[in-house]
Image: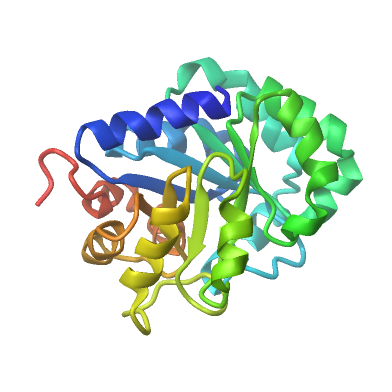
Amino acid sequence: MTKHKMAETFAQVKEEGKKAFTAYIMAGDGGLHMLKETILLLEDAGVTVVEIGIPFSDPVADGPVIQEAGKRALAEKVTLQEVLAELASFKDDISIPVVIMTYANPVFKLGAETFADQCAAAGVSGVIIPDVPMEEETEFKEPLTKHDIALIRFVTLTSSDERIDETVDGAEGFIYAVTVNGITGARAGFAGDLSAHLARITEKSPVPVLAGFGVSSKEQAEILGAACDGVIVGSKIVSLLHEGRGQEIKELVPGKVGVK
């Protein structure tokens, strides 16, 4: 499933008058054997794209909930290679695009070329590496491009108009619009005129713009989604899965049939 397949998925959602909903999960939280079942559950809940986090010992962008999920996965000895191999074993059974979220170190350890090859074998559509700035993305991007896999870029609240222009120029997959200054985690609300900020990025971007970090309710998803192309929800979903309340995820998805 290439980045073009992801683009088709986003286009279909837009055509239906809906907003994209990306769900973040931590691979290996609860055991790697749960990965397929969890992705199928998300698919059934109406999720557009699944973002799969790779456990890492120094997750600089992750808040407490995702850090704890990463620790649980690391305790299960889950590695990047194992996650990609597990994904490859059932890639034909899932229909929603898969994005991998990892840090630079595991990719360096595996080798950027090998990583790209294994992502392709696993049917991955996109990759997010939050600790690699745009200026240093080439060695990661080139091997992924060979396999038609998107390297997804971030825009933050502190990004200048000039920086936003640079980021959206040549952007692939989608733009990850960070909605808070800080780490991931559920929040009661958002500061400032976030809608105007998101609308400005969306107006400039040739690819969908998804708002993430801190989105924890259907109401927040609808408010933020109104100003861009959709949202990314992580900590809330990780918590629900850990607590055995995965069926409640569909209540977060705006526009999901049968959900008020």
